[in-house]
Length: 431
Image (cartoon, rainbow, N blue to C red; front, side, top):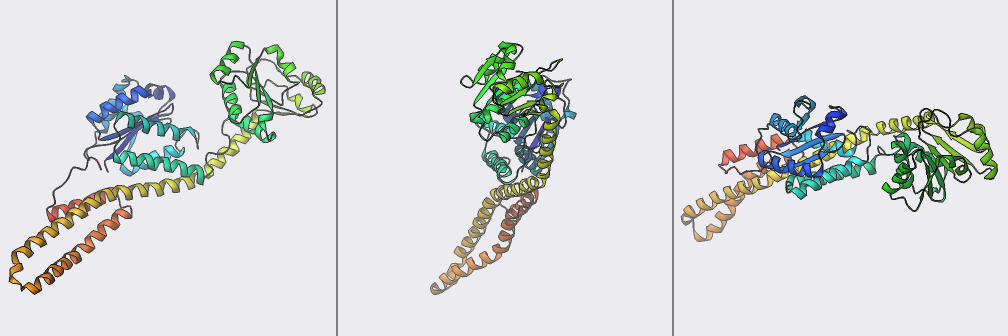
């Protein structure tokens, strides 16, 4: 199989290099059109913030990977900044296995990344829209999505928060059984605040109040997340009052002093009938005075508490890697069985037809030498001889493909058969 893959990722290139190679959807489509004209029968491009990878089927076994790297660099106008040394690549089974690992999330910066499967699916969709997909890449897409589904259902590699913001929300969801009936105060609308708010919405939080030094930024966050019905923006000086009504407080701001003080909390706890208040401080430096934890029914978790949760979850995910490796190996084998059968089937059919033609020709030439009553027996006998002769080579060829023999081995067997029996070689179009 003339499948190859080349690309750059967080494993080989820094962020500034990956940024230069990132492609928009329109760029991906244009690149695929040009690549199909110059290099491939079928192709697909994955471009995310952490990787830009090209997969394609070449018309023959001679692969100009240096030319492909130069093409990608020139296409992005990154010559002199991005070099061929930033790229990695593999062929045939290595490419299939790599794509499966990518889809499984085990080649991601964060092991078990759940977004990458959708990004790979989107890449296949773009290739389909561009008209550069074919039977092999379509089958590869189905197999890739199947790997992603198996990994998510048969392993727990995607489970457990591995970011501090998500760990904060997971902690809140464990404390309160029904977040839909709870309200949260989010202090800070920066990048971490935005991620935290997304996770809170994803967990079905009932209400969210947001306080940020720049009110417009908090308002913009509610607009961007379309949280009009559950979101409310507060002024910074309304934080103390908000402590009286919310169940959860999550802070992620840079502040030279503590924003939440024990005296504030103690005062507000009297007004909320001592209903529990959970405060999760993911600011560095901390924005909640640790002494708040001494106030009755107030529970404060800081970055160290959450980091311990994240570290534990990362170790749990790493422990799942052997299961994922097994799935990738099994599905790679299955893909090659399918691919090998593509080549074996037509060859068996053509070989059988060629031998049958010889039999028929010789029977016709000599049939008059036999008595009329014996001619049916001649037909039957010659067919039986042919079937006996072909049985073993056909069985071996078919079994080799079904057992997942390396593509090159199957191709060599097919070529030998075609040469020996004078069967015309057909253009495989990379398959």
